[in-house]
Image (cartoon, rainbow, N blue to C red):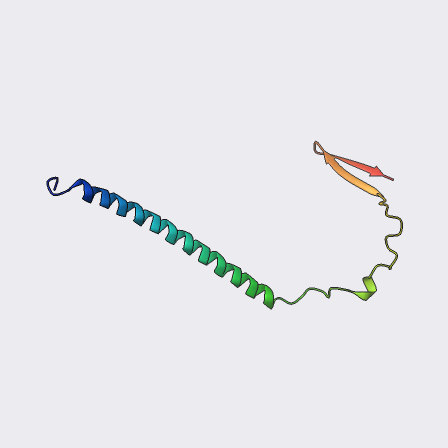
Length: 91
C-alpha cells in the first residue's frame, strides 16, 4: 500500500475528508434550522386557533378621560423581604 500511495493521493484524501466533515456540519445546521422553522409555524398555527380571552376594550372598565390627573403614586401598604425577614410599612 505504501508503494502505491503518493503524496498527491494522500493530500486529496485529506481534502475530501475535510470537505465531508464540513458538509455534514452544514447538513446538521440546516436540518436544525428547518426544524426550528417548522416548530415556529406549528406554534403560529396553534395560537391562531385559540379563542381570545377578552375583548381589547371593556367600556364598563375604561378609566375616566382625565385619568391620571395629578401624576402621583400613593403607597398604602408596602411589603419587602430582607435576609428572610418581612418588613411592613404602612402609610
